[in-house]
Length: 116
Image (tube, rainbow, N blue to C red):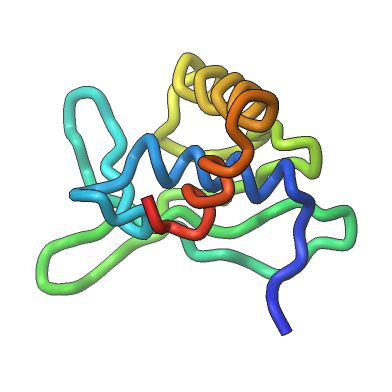
């Protein structure tokens, strides 16, 4: 049994993975215009409304990590909370998700699977 969420929420997470992937790996996100720190997203419990929730973790030396805050992607794909993302990036992610849903849903699906 898998994790249930809405398609819009999953598509937003796929765009985040694509835009901030480190060396093509969508599981390690390089975020920040100046510091370029590496993070990973730890998914939380399944939400009845179809949202995605979890914790953003920063990767530290010696294979350690630390929580930097909570994440929430609404059922409609809107990013409510995602630490370290600036507003411009949030809007770009949401706009890219909507554009890809309309123009190239197959490619967006591949982004979600992490195959491209």
